[in-house]
Length: 155
Image 1 (cartoon, rainbow, N blue to C red):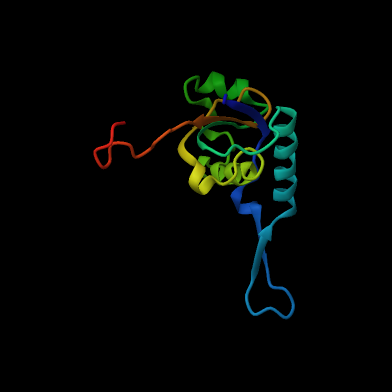
Image 2: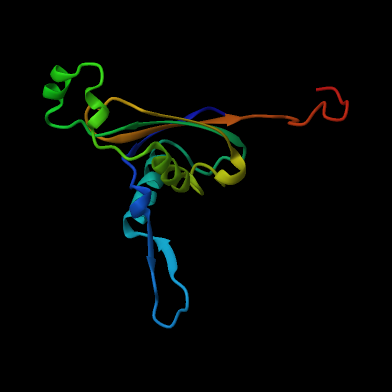
């Protein structure tokens, strides 16, 4: 199995990902995916298919992603003022917000279930270089016998 590399749209903020409402006749609020979240998941599905993903991986995986915020129109002015840290004030969702949305959108498309499959996560925020996006690499982790040697067996 080889790595899967996808360039995805900038993720929906986790704050807008869920919609909670009180349906008439219910005693407790109901939480569902927002329309924006459904559209994002659909876009991820299409991009994965276009990249050759035909079915979700059924093995352990490592996920690495890089979040690229949109480069602001005044980026050159900011860079001239502070060349080393010009992008610190650029609007960007939190990495952990992006992670939840990413894993949820990959579920059932590229991976079966993040609960048992995702064994390693690496995330970084990149310097804005143009359009906002999320680049993700999914690497299968193949283990023949994860607990070999636990009871004295040969590894």
